[in-house]
Length: 161
Image 1 (cartoon, rainbow, N blue to C red):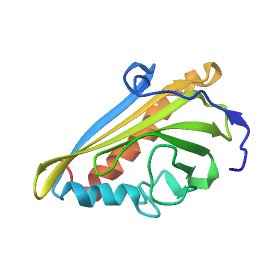
Image 2: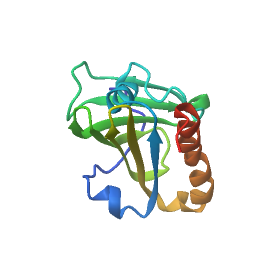
Image 3: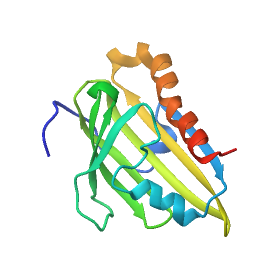
Image 4: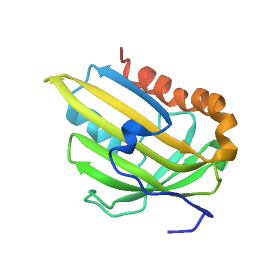
């Protein structure tokens, strides 16, 4: 793993509920849960999100707890190394940031939960949890606006309600 400069604090699942800055959205998707799970584990996951330049897996398959990946936003404005601390194949994955090229947060974690609602539909719940770096807290409204584009793009991609 290439060092980007700013180590972050590892977290566990509790952080997803207790972080000082949280965004969450649930998407009712007219596709089978296995298909949506597949979209989250392809070579370039979340490719439909305009904010993300790309996400690259840095661990070999099969993925599980300990898997790593690198996320880059447009213009390489932010490069984040991530490590998965929860992996329930076909259902749930959660990661925290190991380090970032910018000192924007002390901790960051995300959770993807895919739950079947029928044979042909599912609910995808996406949570983003952050403990901002004190100097970056003034940017919370801008960060909320930018990060919410991930949810809007996902609604659009899936035609979700």
